Length: 113
Length: 114
Image 1 (cartoon, rainbow over the protein chains, first blue to last red):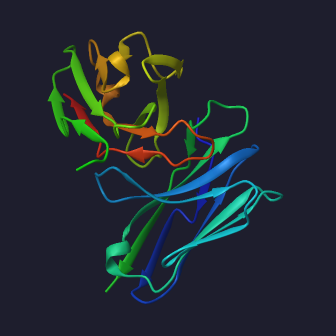
Image 2: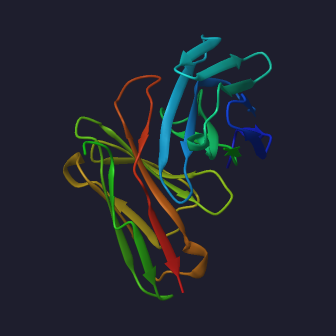
């Protein structure tokens, strides 16, 4: 069953704008990971944030985690047309098989030139 | 390319036929996972290997599905007597045997059952 739930389901912005995607989940986690998927392709790992971390940065990506609210956000700054893709959050749940990931339905991001 | 490799990339088969997919994980990764993704959904877990041992199977994995990982290297996923509902993207992922480590996915095999 799916665990995370991304919001919004779809996001459309202009190049140069920032894109924020949110993820909510239901159980305690070991870590949360964000992935990107271009249409019809595999998933590309973007960033992993551990349950004891609150914020991580990687290039133009910023991820936050609030375990008290069971939520995470992914911010892409200065977006580019090449960022157009589906973005998924995935949780590695405490008490579940180590490394087994539970995905949401994703946010479809469209960046217009 | 030293990433996760999946073959074939696309497979079209007639209902009732058997199909087999292959996954070659990143060489030093002990853990290997299979997921299935249908249109508009996120990937759903199918099964997990720790080296050659299959340690968990999802209820999604009916008895028509079987997966192997001989010698703890590549893995195969076989679907027998395919049904139209099996049409999906089948994704393989691998990771190191460490706590809180990222999983790396292959490009997937898209199965269409006609």
